[in-house]
Image (tube, rainbow, N blue to C red; front, top):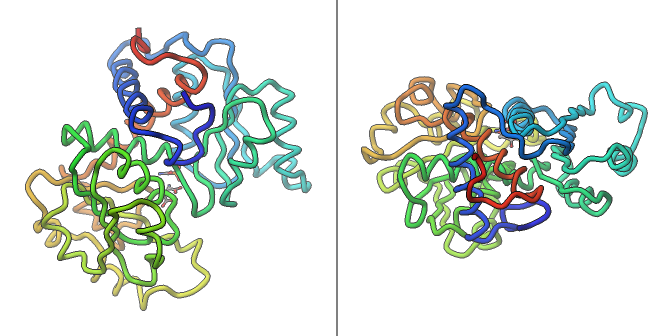
Amino acid sequence: MIKHLLSGADLDAETATLILDTAAEMATLAGREVKKLPTLRGRTVVNLFYEDSTRTRISFEAAAKRLSADVINFSAKGSSVSKGESLKDTALTLQAMGADAVVIRHPASGAPHRLANWIDGSVVNAGDGTHEHPTQALLDAYTMRSRLGRLAGLHVAVVGDVLHSRVARSNVLLLSTLGAKVTLVGPPTLIPVDIATALAPGVQVSYDLDAVLPTADVVMMLRVQRERMADSYFPSAREYARRYGLDAPRMRRLAEHAIVMHPGPMNRGMEIAAEVADSPRSTIVEQVANGVSVRMAVLYLLLGGRGAGAAQ
Ligand code: ASP
Ligand code: CP
């Protein structure tokens, strides 16, 4: 098993499948009266968040607690980071407190990789800048597999602000490893020219959403990340929604079995219409629930668990 989870590229097909299978075992806990396992008793998991988060932060906390780990939640706001303390000194402080795993979200791409050089414990990337968000890709793959029964051979359209999306990058890497076919769709200004070839062989690019929808098994809508946009990448929100937003008429172009995903948070009315987000095709709420099981599996396996029988 790998020590750190920094990138979708850290996972070969065997390791990724082990994580998904272990997550499926963890999910059986959700139906039990007592949702807790003793597996990580005495181990310490630190959640180190330098950037805002709702789903990822809460689900890592829930995951660690369900495995009986001690959890320390650190958010940069309100910490000595505001006094100028560096990431390295913060890391060494956490190390001195005996962190067995550090889950880090940071606005700088590459921060989790730096952290992994400074501490002895495992590091999990919970989103670094515009770079990667590997546990999101794992929970997305888990959701596709549980809704559609397989990953190999699926056609996944990843739509929207690819340029700023760590979710897109990690998904392309993981889905390609697991045999799915990915098409990146969006305006040319939001799809970096070399992204398809740089990330994985066989990734397609299209600027025409309507042309891609009929052959997609999965449509993954990405949030337009205005907080990362210094320039103007499209004429107006209305124009963006008209060309690349998933609304009800567009959803009707999808195959009957196709699902609609979004990592959240959503800009309702922009990349996704409310009636699509709330439709039975949407897996958005399921993705959040699956995130807890997947993060339990990741923490369990990184900290030395062995897979089969994880939830006994
Ligand atoms: N929540 C995801 C992330 O942190 C996606 C997004 O913010 O749009 O990358
Ligand atoms: N999907 C996701 O990472 O959500 P948060 O930014 O709320 O953690």
